[in-house]
Amino acid sequence: MNIAFDTLGKEPVELDLEANASELPELLESGAIGKVHAHVDVTPLAEEIYLARGEVRGILSLDCGRCLDKLDQPFETQFNLLIGKRKEKGLDWLEDEDQGIEDYQVKLGPDVFDIPLDHIIAEQVILNYNLHPLPDLDAQNNCVKCGRPAPVIKEKKKTDRVDPRWAMLKALKEIPAKPAPKGKVSGEKRGKSES
Ligand SMILES: [Zn+2]
Image (tube, rainbow, N blue to C red):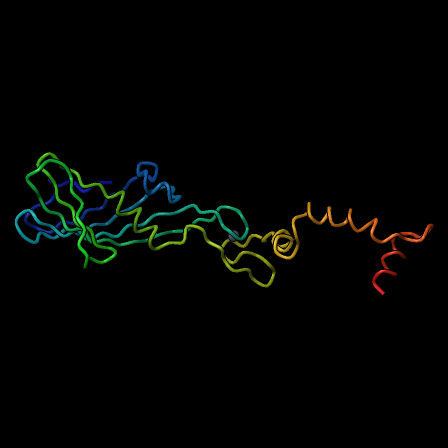
């Protein structure tokens, strides 16, 4: 997903860009799927200097930390990109100490005609969205985001029980420590030791 520099002129332009998430490797890492749309308003500020203000929409397919299934999370992020030219070849991303979290600056060499937006979009998604969601549960123990039941029993075992191997070891050790009278069944044995 690129801004083509030669589409920019003396008048403001609005660009509607679309790409498949699979074409945006950095964004793909965040779990993006399907189409990604960007609407970009570009305003010329001076000779060969432009301000591009973009809004990007798409969908992330995340792993729901509650029901452990896939969860579709729509995303919408913004960015401001100051575009300028430079004499040297290549593309130079600059950073100012006082620039905001959505602000970017780039300078294009004479050999560069496209400004890639992949990194900007990926960074804004990472900054604005929790990629490891853990939604609340409703009264029926269903995940509020996707409505699927949460595996509650598994979670409880993890928190208030020791490793099952330790529990087994403990049980093995306890048997000889409490010699039961001959002929008694295990149920009675337990009752006695608790009293
Ligand atoms: Zn869920």
